[in-house]
Length: 105
Image (tube, rainbow, N blue to C red; front, side):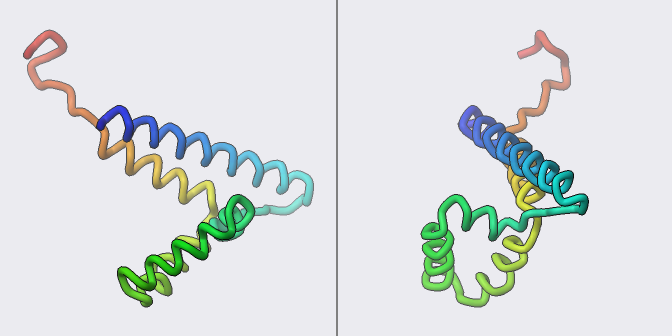
């Protein structure tokens, strides 16, 4: 389980770096700061899955949750959202080193 969480963290980190690189290239080309919101990035990759997530959250959890939480997340920069996801997954999978040292049980 820890391996899967670390792998998912790595994938989220790679996606964050790619999104940040794309924003950097667009910023240099436009001579202004360009930051892609999560909603635009998600629509570029898979617009049908965004609508599916919206309907699932509205139906199964609560319609206000989508309005409050998901809309806030979707307006954040894509690279920042994926960096936070990567950090959270890494923190969940982190194994604390033993206090007694490397060769202890």
